[in-house]
Length: 480
Image 1 (cartoon, helix red, strand yellow):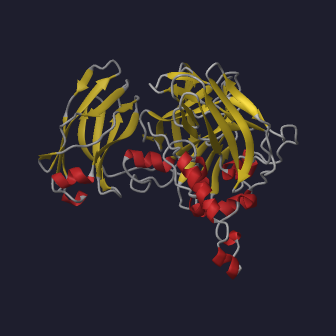
Image 2 (cartoon, rainbow, N blue to C red):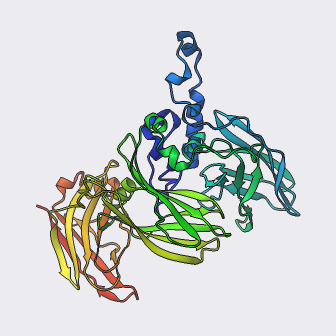
Image 3 (cartoon, helix red, strand yellow):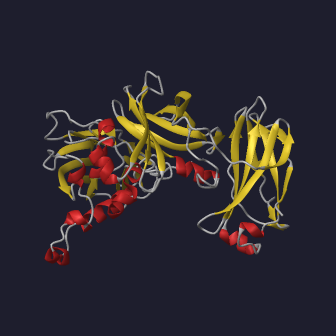
């Protein structure tokens, strides 16, 4: 699974236009990760004018966009001290809320009155159930260890840029949840969402919404992104989870992500899992890509970087022969808080009316058992490794799983290590098989570029959904 806390929500919107705020193009998951938010905070701190800037008359607006230029987030919201969780051994208290660098910082206190050290985690990959007002947010990250009989203060924050994009003007409610484990990594408690009301809880509703905010010209101009596609039709059509909107965003670097706005209309915590991503009729991701927690009555933006999906398949959008992301299809599975399946369904997003394009000019290397395999190309990545790409077509009436057998790859007659992920294809489906060899493994076989490869050979395992073998052919490619 590739999770970009990665594919980060803030980064695709802000990207290069907020270089001073640490934006980094997202893989996955879905969400801005903690490192990116911390970088954002540090960078925003740097926007305060230095002595030299003050003497020269240069103000902070010349260094990076200030958060107040983007949204209308109130900076005078407060909270009363609130005990969030308490039992015989543990107490978690929200002490206060303050704003630094235009972002809200929640001050927390953790008490451990038990006989074992405890860890408190919030906003992580393992458990991310935090929210502001009606939206789940990637922020308020906590990771603190507390020894027996001790108390630990901690502060947690969320990016004001993210809140602005969501159209949040006044923070009325903060939701935060914690996973608590003892020193032996046994789960002590899983609190679920805990809510804090603020001094603005009874104020007027925000005039902005997420859909209005992302189309606000002031914001699009500042961050330098464009909205290429927007659809408010419910793509889930389910009584528990609603697909509110779908949106394609292109940032200043030309990177594109599909944002799915989903709403949990049930009274239970739900998780939405995205898997098996198909672009222009070819599967780029087989298996799980990202999973997002959505509290009852809350919405979440699920970010799917299409460029990261292409990279996962072994190349850039251009290297894979994709002119435009025309159609995107994926599996959307809903699970409860105990990971029991609630529903499974597919969703298709037609982003534009251009002709679907993908790699052409492949060389057929296998055609049997209603399966066709063609060699496409070998690409060099930015780390010095290579990706050998094969197009697989399952023309049968059953699911087939493809795996490159361990210890069977040779280049120019010399065995080498590699990485290749399992691929499961539904009937009448195409996918890219990506065999990756690292820079260091290439050095062992004295290859420095794709042009030096004349012969590729490996064994491919093919089996049905009951794990019965279909074939185990030797795939041979002569490139010169």
